[in-house]
Image (tube, rainbow, N blue to C red; front, side, top):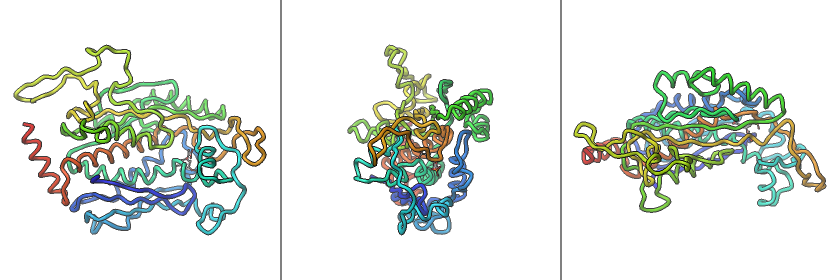
Length: 381
Ligand code: EPS
């Protein structure tokens, strides 16, 4: 394990924090870019009131000196501004307020209460909240800068909200990326964004919520990251595990991996060789991974997000105190967080790719990593 991390923090506690260990020394960081990713995560049509309160920013505590990594653990904090309003409920010193006794179907509320022996689902939901993904995105922001130094670019887009889906097979162009970043639906096509906004509005009016599909792309990868030699070294396994670790992600697809309706000759990518290009393919149905190993083609990974389980028209549940039928308690939430999930998925993919790169080319200093990559690329040629 060359790169590892831990996050901590409750949604309305004082802060979210993270420690990353295994970054090579000598990497120049633009710390403002991490905050830029945190702002991207806060955006999106369909977000709830919390995002009006927060202006997420990472405060770095260790592992960086003069904007250059030291090779020592990098600790960071994202303060929860909203904690000021929750001090009586959510401090290490206080736990006031009414208990949360009507668990929301689809959330971790009931499972967590049963598992940990609580009588208040708040003890569960504060950590189960997708608020924790702010820490994930800050870590991804660091990984992205390492990848960028090593020639790898990671980006994302939304491919579906509710029933309207439009996938891409190839990464967005730089011009399309500008449009994606400017869009409150995180997509290059404004007409598509408008149809998704209408779906979000419909669900808001129904008191419901809506999920969708996000796509993450990575370009500039050498062939040979990850491995087939053991299940836990397969990069597709690591990407899927990481992505399913994001709250509300229920399924992952690599390339056209779910197209089990296709026969083999239309599922795989024929191999060619020319003196100019070496080994290559004319298609990328595999999404850049074969046998758990990068092929050198762009990585294409999709993550499916379920509708957020907190709804103003709640589902049936049972009260934890009385065991009587009840309606699930409503907590402030998002009607749709699919654009934000794309940014989080990007961070997770960046993190896993940075780990895979360091595993193959690892060194104590980022220049050592670069040299190892160059030597490997020369062998491939
Ligand atoms: C989130 C912050 C949370 C929720 C959301 C994600 O803030 P609050 O509970 O104060 O409104 O908006 O969490 C959920 C959707 C959930 O189900 O837990 C964030 O920062 O992304």
